[in-house]
Length: 158
Length: 290
Ligand SMILES: Cc1cc2nc3c(=O)[nH]c(=O)nc-3n(C[C@H](O)[C@H](O)[C@H](O)COP(=O)(O)OP(=O)(O)OC[C@H]3O[C@@H](n4cnc5c(N)ncnc54)[C@H](O)[C@@H]3O)c2cc1C
Image 1 (cartoon, rainbow over the protein chains, first blue to last red):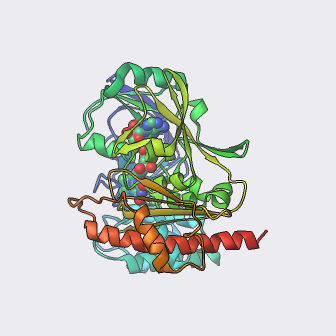
Image 2 (cartoon, rainbow over the protein chains, first blue to last red; image 1 turned 90 degrees about the vertical axis):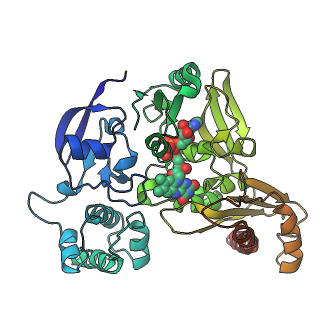
């Protein structure tokens, strides 16, 4: 029972069958086995949000999910948001508004903001603060990140 | 993280059998937001992890059965916070679920996990206490219905027996109107547990239920049936004296990194009076809206 466990997951639209160790997290498998290093490893206690991915339609901290728990599920990482090499409008807004400084937290911020805009297309500042409360930015770009989400929401309304 | 065997039972009976067979060497996995942290830091090293999420009878969901709202143990905070029946009858619980961690945490954190982890700071605990919730369990000797007040012992410890797990939390839908509220103080929203939690519920008969957490080894509930706390004409001074007695079981640890005992006790009094005011307002609004 301690061996490798075969799982099937759809990652960024592509069906994969992989073998994972029971004690490996979704974060570890995404980064180390699937080389999807856009998802960042940071606090490992669910506080910083750098490892945020979408699992079966909801964002989660992938450091707190075992890879086996994703069996049969669908995962979207930051690499899967836009078609190859492109940017979503939201990602473009992050650049335009200067929301990116060192960049480390950004994949998680973008995943959380993308999730917010799917649920709440025209969020207020308070809704943005709540939607992104699980994502820390140590450069302190919260103002610019909020502006980026507002700008993306506005652009989508047009 | 130390290696463990991962099991994925498909029935409650199978989960109970596994849990009973492995005893303290086994751990149940619901959303994992408490468990995986402890597996990683090595403070728990089970041989077997039993995932509850593939059990057909334990699928997440909220159902109304015979004037009771039955919340499956695996239901996550996001869904509890969004449920209109919870908001209508058990507003303190809806508010508590809405402030647990962040969006990412609420999408995973289950009600069963919050209760069974038995943290004194668990946000849903005071709400469940004032709403008179019942934990429905399954175990080797069958099913039990445990009033939530009899479940908590101290952090990480409940009165569940070997092989026993919580299958659902039941909330009796009150016959008359109730005004309720959940309040907390925390250092940082989205990342930290509460330094003080408080829930208050007042019914049309003037009975006030107050529950508070994070100020001692387990959350505590106290009831005022005299009608004084529910009386909007009573002075804050008169209420404060009674509140003081209801808070008698508060004994915050002097070793906590979150807040000093003095801060916690001071805030408990503030939240107590504030909670009463809000619950009275809400009860009046609900009665007016009939
Ligand atoms: C960043 C962060 C922020 C947080 N913020 C808050 C907060 O604001 N408020 C708050 O209250 N909590 C908070 N938590 C704690 C945690 O998210 C909650 O306690 C959550 O509800 C636990 O549920 P879970 O499904 O993730 O439990 P798990 O981690 O899966 O399980 C917790 C414990 O309960 C046991 N268990 C689970 N389900 C059952 C069952 N059905 N029967 C018997 N035993 C069971 C498990 O074996 C384990 O010991 C936070 C956690 C993190 C990481």
